[in-house]
Every structure is written in C-alpha cells, then in structure tokens.
Figure 1 (spheres, one colour):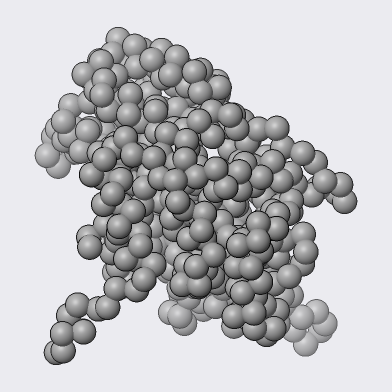
Figure 2 (figure 1 turned 45 degrees about the horizontal axis):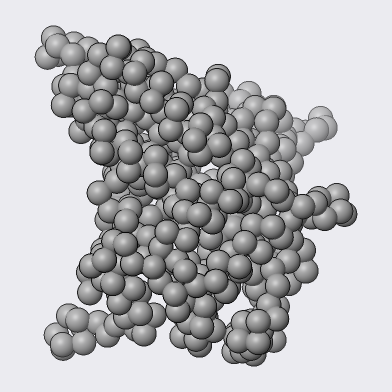
Length: 451
C-alpha cells in the first residue's frame, strides 16, 4: 500500500477550513474579518458545487435545474458566480415556498433557494462552520453538525437515563425557523465574524423573501427551512442556550438538543419543574417560546418521544427488574408516517399490477432507509408489525386489481398473501435488519478537525 493510500492528499478547501478551525480554537475571542474574499475562490466554489450536486434538490424560482447547469457547463456557471461576488453585484433571489406534510392535517413550509444561491450559501457554510464549530464543541447540541447526528444524540439520552436521570422535560420549540429574530442572529454572528461584506450577504439572504402563489412576500423574521445555511444559523442562534445549559448542569439537568427539538433529563420531578422554568426564561430572552401542546414533564417509565423513537424504562420479565436505562423503538408517529408513505409508494391497485417492478423497487429503497435509521434500538417487534402491514397492503391492492369477466379466477386477498409469502421476494425490515449497511455518517471523522 502506498503512502497516498494510507494518507490521502488534503484538498485546498479542507486545508483552509483546518486553518480557520485552529485559529478559532486557539483564541475563543477572535473575530474573523477577511472571509468574503475567500467566497470567490475557485476551489471553494467547486467544493460548494459538489455538496449541492450531491444533495440534489429541486429548482428555485428561476426553474434552473442541476441537470441544465451541467449541460451548459459547470465551470462557466461557477465563473459567473465568482465574478458577481468579486464585483459585489451578487444579490440573493427569493426562495420558492412549498408545503410538505408534517403531521395528520398539518403542513410545514419549506423554502427552496435557486441553485445559484445554494452554491453561494454552501461556500459561506464551508468558511463559517469551522469557526463556530470550535465554539460548539462540548455543548449538548447534535443537530446538523459535522461528525454528529441523531445517533449521537440518542446515545447521550441513553447514557443520562442509565445515570439515574429519570424525569424528563420533553420540549419542542414553536415555529422555531419562522420566528428567529434577525437582529439577535446577526449579533450572535458578529461575536465571531467582523467581515462586513459577508455579514451583509447573510442579512440579504434572511431578507430575500419567498414566492408564494405568484407573489413575493418579505421576511421580517425567521430563516427558511431548506436553505443550505439555515441549520448552521439555527445552531449559532441557540448556542447561548446550549452554553447556559452546559454551564448550569447541576441546576438544570442534562440537556440534549437536536435542532429545535430538545429534552432535559433530571433526577426528580421538582428538578424537572425547575429545569422547565429555566428553559422558558432562557428561550424568552431569544424571542422563542415552547410549544404548549408538545412540552411536558414525564417520568421515563411512562415514555417520551425524541427523534422519531419512543424511549421508555420497561420492566424486564426474564430478569424481574426494570431496565437499567431507557430502551427505544419507532414511535407511533414514525409508524404512522411509514404507513402513509407505503400507501403512496404502492399506489392504486392498477398501478401496482402494471408497474410491479417499479413499485417494489421504490418500496425496497424506502425500507432500506427506514431500517438504516430505526435499527439502532429495540425495533424488531415493531419491524414485524410493519412487515405484516406491507404484506397485507400489497396483497389487498393486488386482489382489487384482478381482471373482470367470466373467465377470471377470483382469489381472496388472503390467497394472494400466501402466494406472496411463498414467493419470498418481498423486501422486509426484519430481513434488512440483519444485512450489512454502509457506515453511519455521524461516526466519520471530520478531516479539517483532525488535521
């Protein structure tokens, strides 16, 4: 094995990020003043383009797609962006707003920037992330950070439960991304960034507005969900809350936050009530409020939902004792989302019969992703129930699609269910659970942090 295979070469963007991270780590009070000129560097824009292309995504209000840009030439596209940034003629465009389902009968607004804006935002994120990541380390924040993910947050919850923190403040911020105060966010950014041009550019992104039903609407507050930079800005905004929770652990309890969803684990109910009052006070200073219907205090033996899992301390019959910590499995809401998605994938009866391979292929792809996330827990029993639902749904739809006429062979859906089971080729969560999966992204080392 050669030296280059054991130590892969470090690209220039990673080297730049490493320098920014190390400088921020050495001096926690340092403000960075020369960042805007690095946005137009060719290798930074190229790295930003690769991230945008990898994440795919739909077109913005200009209807320009990734495929069209690749057909016209990526180099020309990036050169035009670099020139606009150098000449300071670049202006963000409003995002295209769409509504995506969130809960039964509810939707969530999603903002889709243009590809051009996504590339520039990705370039800004490449520069800002190492600086603020030096501050985020050691805080209870796990959402949208390099090298971290939901599994690390779930592991932290399990560790705190095993340590005896049985009372939980199960909290959720109300319309977090829609109610961010722009002035407070800019003040939080200025704590580390003094580059006026870059700060003005971020402010223009916040004020760009959105297109809805043919009209452009302004944005006085909030950051659009769907923007490349929005998750980082959210973490910057809530960093004061994270830092206060970490500094006052003995008073507050054990805080674990993932984006706008967080739990505080405490030793007693009185401790949990004190932690809830503290959280309300801290968030009020940031102009935020807790969702009144989704925030509660509960003992972990009653169970609580966090990051799609239901967590509960259960009684182990074989051991004749309660579990040492909480165990977890897919929550009822996650199971309902699975059923809703399955109905859309399988489609109406005739579509299933005429496009069998396409439907089963899409189903397998979805099941792999679902299993990849929810297999990190005690999910086998739930997986069996969902597998049975998949079999029954497909058997019923296939039965309804039977041809009519005198010569038809009428079969019940139970007969089709037996045939499907004998066939043995339907994808199942319980089978996928045993198979190999690619490495979980949260466990990967961040190269610029390790350099």
